Amino acid sequence: MDMLRELFSGALALSWQQGIMYAVGLTLILLAILKDYEPMLLLPIGFGAILVNLPFATVWTHGGEKGFLQIFYDAGIITELFPILIFIAIGAMIDFTHLLSSPKMVLFGAAAQFGIFFTILVALMLGEAIPSLDIDLKIAASIGVIGTADGPTSIVVAQQFASSYLGAITVAAYSYMALVPIIQPPVIRLLTTRKERLIRMDNQVRKVSKMARIVFPIVITVVAGILVPASAALVGSLMFGNLIRECGVLERLSKTAQNELANLVTLLLGITIGATMRADQFLRAETLLILCLGLVAFVFDTAGGVLFAKLINVFSKHKVNPMIGAAGISAFPMSSRIVQKMAKEEDPHNFILMPAVSANVSGQLGSVVAGGMILQLVPILLEKLT
Image 1 (spheres, rainbow, N blue to C red):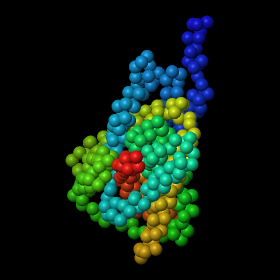
Image 2: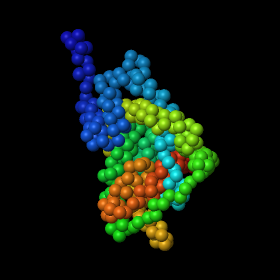
Image 3: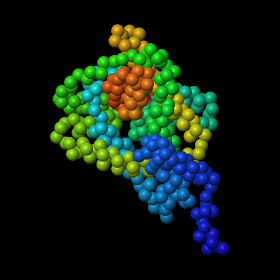
Image 4: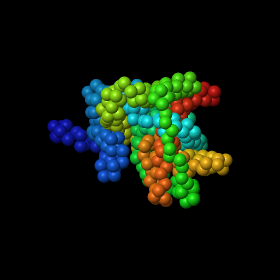
């Protein structure tokens, strides 16, 4: 009998909570395969969630020793190495030429961060109204950052402020990034008229010198590092990747960063994040709240960008298509493509992709700076309040 019990110890150790996590992991995998929603992330996250919820979680710890997923977590998440490497890869992928040719577009990247701070306030109010939820300023800030539509930034902030909710926050961030084509269009249509969606814009891109493209990442790194020191690692890695791209003498490294580095780190990041989704930590009321508030942040970021564009039109002779404000979030390049698709549906000859791309890359930069500001301001506020 003891031998049989030992033989089937895994089956006897299964719980219904683990069964739910298998279903969650399988759902993420199916969304990746069948719907093509961020497959490079959702598939490894889903598989990691299944792995870590197997009986005795031997992939996390086994026989008093760290399992391989805990080793990945300690080496890549706690140290923030994986997000930093991802930012280098993203920087190598981004072309800031459109933004440099029209610098005013940076305002849309800033306006589209409104949802972050709105959601932080909502989360704090809910925490006050329902004390059992145990939401403090750090957790509220971590939830709000989901609205950046920037997975690495969400990971860095959550790891520092709310590590026990890292899995839920990361899954929410990447899931809503994947659902941009579903979430953004209804919000845009709700806030704009057909006349506004028909506005045409100048797509001519001014020529930007190579020197300007090289100087830009250096200047941004220095300015952000001085004004928002906590953003130095995030902004610096993003701009370093971009400098590799633009310098013209590191083509092999640029391609490596865009391909091999991005693919390898994304793979390790995904399965490691999935390993944080242990049933005892994930299946809580706070998880459902995080998913709901993450959606609020995403929606209000989109709305903030659109409404800012409408405000500019009140005072400007050269009207802006308000839809490009929605591209100010960090979901690059998906959001700008959605905006162009919507413009084409209204008018097959309306081409606003270039302005949308400018807003989109500024959103990528804005989300990193917003994350850095939160990392810097939250400890200061907590110190003042205590």
